[in-house]
Length: 384
Image (tube, rainbow, N blue to C red; front, side, top):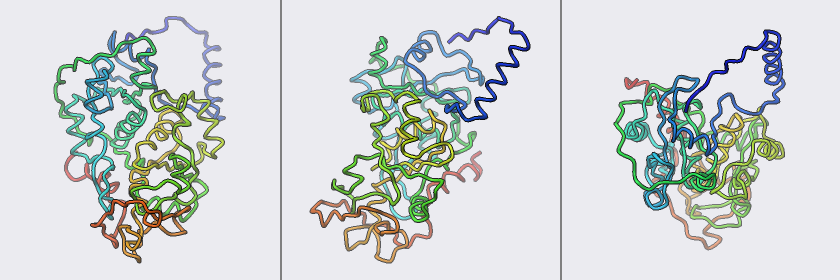
């Protein structure tokens, strides 16, 4: 992109007036946008693809485009020209434990993320542009990069999917770009944002305390929220105090293939749910992917305080009494199938639903925030 400087000279009084107006807008909180523009249009992205990224106002001069999808869709469906595969089957989740039990859909660890970004040629000069074929994967990619320390000014998300890019009049391509030159970039040169991820111990505390400054948002369907739909977990229902706001309500035509709604519409939805700048939203779904769309809307578009419960119901729904095919002993402090921590509780075994049991959980683990603790300190052990 070519950045042009405005050559017009403004009178001093006019300039002061403009600055004062801007200050007043910020002071009154009328501007709901974050300080850095993350979301971009297909037109802006196509301009960068065609003319180059240039040097932005933060001094970054390199662009790496990633396509969050699986290998089959990447080569079969096409991608924004020059985009590298960010494989949803392997790059955006890992089996890890917060201390109690291994869960398959957790945030990847440092070594995996570093191998990914180095293989993509991402370095200290790089802005990452996230594209993909559905908003769940795009949101998940954004969360992973934010969690591991990439600031908003280094992340751009095309609002919409590859289909949106085509609808704007721009072609996709299927010829895989040449392998990039590897970098030696380390996330230890960044400041990790582990606080953006909520652990199961965080969610237990929120459920029990009903903090008025926090709002728990369940972005699943109403049937999942109400415990009507069965699941492979030991019990169904929702986290205590959670409000139900299906993630599709944030998308044009409620489709994961479409862009996020305009910011003013998102503001209206959040206002109706009791979410604003004064509160912290804790978002979850079944595996953390649908909740990533809500995370994207709140963090990137609104600039609100938000934490994603990474384990989501795939973890929470298993932390039940082993007599109900849960993972824990009856007297485990980490059980979530209690009236103090969950609502609309129904056990899958009583509903005739099959349960994918966890058999190696530690019912009396000393902590349940191990991933956050590990990832926030991994760069303080000689790696930095």
